Image (cartoon, rainbow, N blue to C red):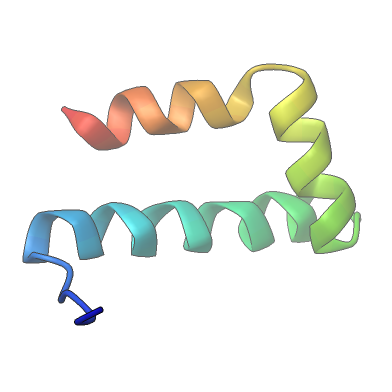
Length: 54
């Protein structure tokens, strides 16, 4: 199977979300994994996906 390259828009979305999670973790003094699960549990990741798609 050939690996596919992400287009610029998809790459930007991934970069945005992977920037936000550690930034959120730092702001609330959490480790990154806890921040990820917190955002996932309380709908933060869903929100990030929605605004990244626009």
